Amino acid sequence: MIKRYFPPVRETVLVVVITFVFLLLTAACIGLRPEHFLMAGLFFVLFFAGKTTRKLAVALLPFIIFGVSYDWMRVYPNYQVNPIDVQGLYEAEKSLFGISVNGVTLIPCEYFAIHHWSVADFFAGVFYLCWVPVPIAFGLWLYLKGDRRMYLRFAMVFLLVNLIGFAGYYIHPAAPPWYAMNYGFEAMLDTPGNVAGLGRFDELMGCTIFNSIYGRNANVFAAVPSLHAAYMVVALAYAIMNRCKGWLIALFAFIMVGIWCTAVYSGHHYLIDVLLGISCALLGILVFEKGLMKWGAFKRFFERYSKYVE
Picture 1 (cartoon, helix red, strand yellow):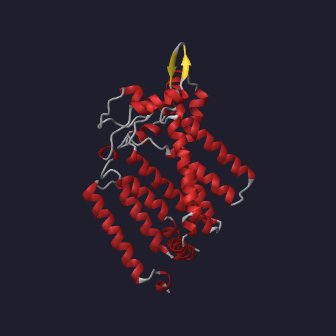
Picture 2 (spheres, helix red, strand yellow; picture 1 turned 180 degrees about the vertical axis):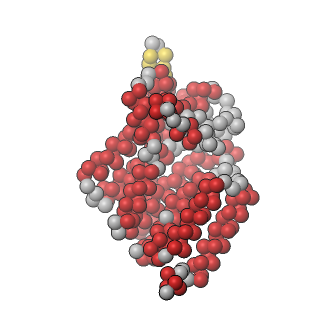
Picture 3 (cartoon, rainbow, N blue to C red; picture 1 turned 45 degrees about the horizontal axis):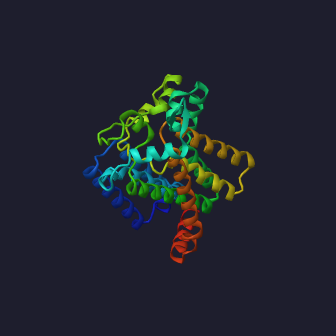
């Protein structure tokens, strides 16, 4: 009876070997942290607990690959590949979207650093806490309601958009607005992460949510494109493709625009970053739906993947 639910030997060996190699390479290249063991342990539990949870474990692979890819950028930081843009992006933002205040031109982030409101600070924090949880929750909802093919399309586009964004980080390493506002235009590689305007949410709520998130940022020169701006574009697009309820589409659109505004209001991204993030999401959707899904080899892979998790 137990054997019926245990994965085939080939799959078992493959999972064990890949997990062991992942932990070994991570330990050697960037150092193991508790979350690495947590991720590996959770995958093992899901994969070996039973047939139903094994399908879920395999279905979650696009999100796992996303997390591993982001973490592994520590191995060879983007600022070792190309020069860091600090001043050029700041000047471009000022030229395109500058706001004149008493004869002085400010970038939007500088304007909001001076002019901010408690209500806006509260909603900014709420919106920014949605940027990853809401898309992942949407994907799990698609999976659990049985629409596995749509789930996989969404999950794989989510991964593709991230990989395009990560490539952007290496092509054009760039400092966020708060860096130029606080440190000027000289790139200092040991600069710690900064909570910027989101610190006002922590102060308002008497917590350290964003301080704990941004205090661990290992590379502050990965601002272009803004993937914060991209994720909800992907979620909204697939909610529309899935013909979800109107209220859900409206909610996603509201959160999406809220995240765009927060990115600038908080000083974490230029408007240029946000526009490039939106473009990154649209490019990922287009490449996947009109390119990869029309390619025979990938389409066959997608069909096999879909059948495995159904």
